[in-house]
Length: 516
Image (cartoon, rainbow, N blue to C red; front, side):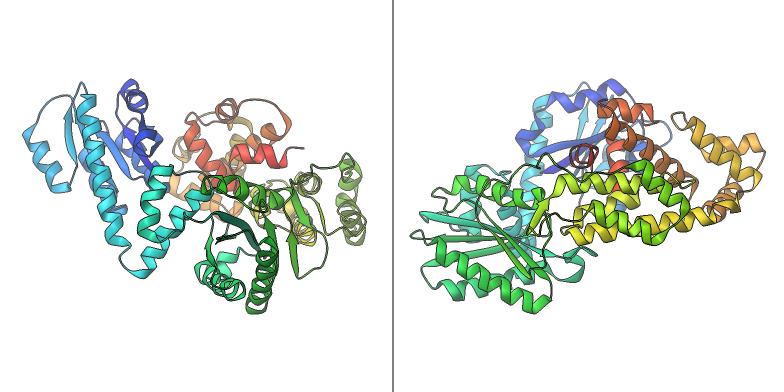
């Protein structure tokens, strides 16, 4: 789904644009809004959009200046200009910039919708041009397949695209498997080209199954390889053996462990593929690998919920070990909490993750300026109990090192800035205003802060706010929007982007996955 962003110095208009059109009907989602060109430019630097609808006359930076700058950064963005009055010079400049339409206020909704339909046609033509090469064709095909299994495409569009892209919809039986390559240290996409691995898996499985099957393999958004087997009759045993054989070949090729989860034993309607995919992915979300198997295969079954007995953490006892700095005792304690039980192949992910988070937060709490992104950012890549133990120990080891370095202290001016953040983080804070209170040039003060703290003032402030928001998400039932406001973010969409930037997950994912 493509994105649309609104800019207008009248807040009611900027907010109203989100509701006057059913954007989802045009496969668009509203990514945010801004009340002037500079504010919009700052947001769009971090997160480009497909369509920008902007007013012309705005303070600080007008709409045409904004379009010039956005076009330089993101050439494929399309633009619609709004104005309260007709001005031929603006129209001429807009035409040279390649805007799609110049709409006078009050906005004619029919004209706006007609413009959006025209833009969608341009997007489709551009998309067709881009996929003419083989690689672009694969990307487009993979995108349609991902939307199919995740349920983000309508049947009418799927049928239309399937004929063009060679996606089989006419078979009476389908089997969905999802294959995960295990790399706890780095994402698999950093190690290998996933489309090539998917092609190799497809070749290996096709050779095993023979001509009465059609096999499609493609990477999904989580760097897993989706294995879709279509056949004229149900042969689940053959599909399982063929998949195991393909896993062995990929294991030999990459040296990585393989974990395969099977969806429903057989799906007899291409519309039910999504449920089978959801079931297969559910295994990964529910479990961590505890054993040492090189290849692990999960047959179709609803993932079991976490048992009543979960790893037990005593934060007070662990904090005492941290203060004492006894490395061997700390390692033994971590091993005892995350021991994996009685030799099972897998253990419940949620319970182990929660215990690990408690251990790591206890370690971060002894630091003077803790960075909680170190805790959460890598966790979505962890699939094994050993990988989780290693991650916990890395965090503890860094905290011990920083605890030893904590007595270095800051200079008077930098201490003032740190204190302002710690005591006034919900308020409007900037290096410019604080430097005036210290009667110092903001650039020089910023350099001092960077040298002593090891981060820019804005990064330190955002990181501190996100840490406070994380604590509220994990330990209260407050709404996310209220938490954002309470830690200093008046724009909830900007808070979501900053939160994901510093923690690697969204606030909703944080609360559902790691809540203690």
